[in-house]
Length: 346
Image 1 (cartoon, one colour):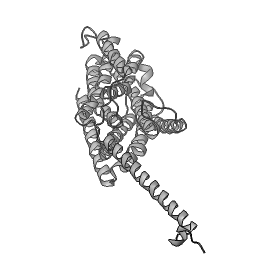
Image 2 (cartoon, rainbow, N blue to C red):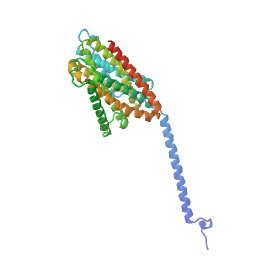
Image 3 (cartoon, rainbow, N blue to C red):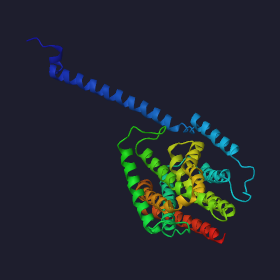
Image 4 (spheres, rainbow, N blue to C red):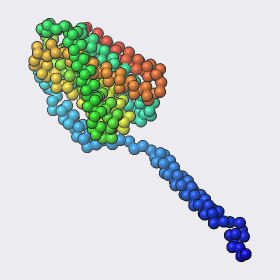
């Protein structure tokens, strides 16, 4: 019998097929390993590249120019009112108070790039400040007393009604944003977009009541002195509120100037509401406690259920989040009490 070479060497056709299959498999693995190494190398190269700082958009530049023009052309001849203040004085002091909110970005100039842990710390700071502001708004509404307040409903009840309305509004807004995932601002979308928009909403809402407060203070018997002081006090008070907005914007790669404009935008209702409140002071006084409660309720919800929960997730530490938010809360309460004491002296 004549034997083939394969038979003489002991290789059967099945063994030959198995050998070819193993060879091809080894080649595929080698190719895959090589591709993984190349991809890993590219990823490392990308990771090693420095992160490009965010750039100011055309809209940001235009907004900055508009703010500068308004500041220049609405400036009254004399900042200190002589006799009864004018509408221009009331507007401009409300405008200065709004501009001061933009100063909240200044501390973050020195730390523009924050990792996840420090983003959580920033959220804890913002939450503490907002809880303190919410408490002050509700307390101010409940203890509101004004000779021209002719409402038959107590100020406490009006504040509670406003607080319930504020909670309903912010919960409804959150659900609306959750059902419209397509909405975004630049690169912000999804959960980040919703959280930031809720914070901007509540900060803007509470500025309405502050604007009414400016207008009412100018419309009183000693409006020239009291209105100026109240506006200056609110300007100081607005700086940490601007910081609370900035600390949730800048970690999302938002340009510093853009963040400052967003901070100012949350306080735009102050000059807008100060003027009509000054002109129609008797009509605005009865609704002021409702506005204070509305802003306080909305702000408390966002601070507790959005910012604090986000801070817990980022810091991975209940102790750190609790301590940081408590320090921010106590500092804000101290600042507000100091301003209130100075106001009562005046």
